[in-house]
Image 1 (tube, rainbow, N blue to C red):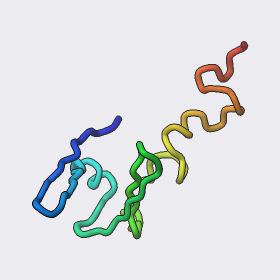
Image 2: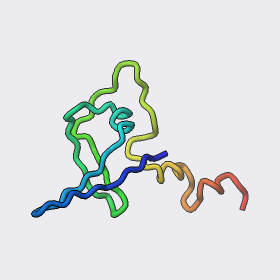
Image 3: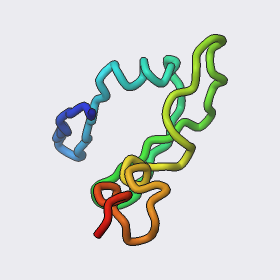
Length: 94
């Protein structure tokens, strides 16, 4: 499930500034601290990556969720499938 937001443009006489706000669900889920520094880069025209400059340790008693580091949702759907085999057809006879 994803969260949607709008890109907002503020035009001034000599400049433009774009804002894309994050819903509170993201920083809360990732345990962000106020003033924490992040960097962003463009992976492709559809993907903007936001990365923490330093990742704090997990709080005591909080289990790590999710899959392996570096796997994207698209790659995790077909992880383990033989080359040329989709998840939907895996295990079925042709």
